[in-house]
Image (tube, rainbow, N blue to C red; front, side, top):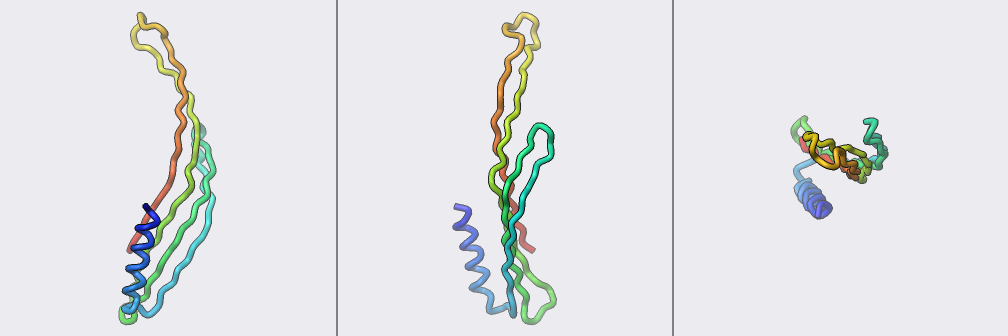
Length: 107
């Protein structure tokens, strides 16, 4: 669904490009590393940037989107009972989590 919105947005910008003298499109690839001790992961990402330069004004318009693959990590926790009469006193559990970065900027 996100790709459809990106396509619609870029199509709309390019259709109105007759107002603009020049435009440029750039892309890059990157690696992202989370350094938190309990949540270390590496992910691959990409940024796509569009710059539009008007024919009459000195200001430019830009739009870029940045997205990354999902970073997965696992955390182990212990839930301790607050009441001394509770049995069992501790429950060990594992949380499996995925974190994904996405960013859109227009200016």
